[in-house]
Image (tube, rainbow, N blue to C red; front, side, top):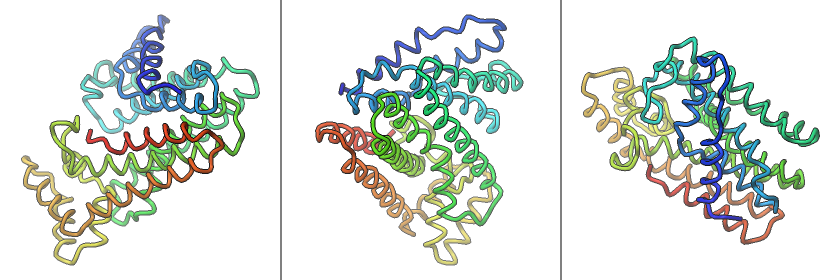
Length: 324
């Protein structure tokens, strides 16, 4: 296995050389635009890494890794339309730079292009990749719908919320890793275990995102701290606070999540204070730790060398020690 920077460089070069000089330009230029905005590209890196965990050259997984990243960006294009978001990675969103119809159509084309990358593999591997990909893509759509539904519901439970982030975020992390295992043609048990590793790490990652949105360092977080509070999002922190709060705190929190003041600074500080008073912040940190440990437990069952287990564990620890 290589250092993380090796996989990052491979993906970066591959996407730099990925050109869609096709007609009509208004379909393909938005696709090139979003793909070349960069981002962390964590998912394709995981596909390459997982392939080498099972002793196969990661370059064999570049097509599968590209499919995952193209799909991820397709989902972002459509999410941005649904959220009416003006910016993505500090740049104009596709529907703002072009228009909504272009964003919808270019997004649709990206989903099809993602599938086409699997055509580089022999039939057996193609079938396994496509089967996993179809299941995952549908789950991501289900997760997005749960997220939309939760915006207008006052009775969202913690199990429901965890299911939503599993489908919306974590299944794609698990699938990215399992695709590497499929390309490497390892055992079914290993492939399922590395999927579980990615899935649990993905849940921990999203819970940490919830936590950092409220308590992250504004200098390093990369986006506005308190964004979820401003948007009245019922995150894990909010749900735990509602579970642990007394009558007064519950009433105050319900009120704060029903208003949209012109200056949100007091609202953010008041909500964070309740998160701390009710110990919802500590409960969220505990949940992050539990899902991270759950991911690490699957490594012990995997039939790979101890140094590779350690590298995967180090990657997970590095991911969960972020403050951005």
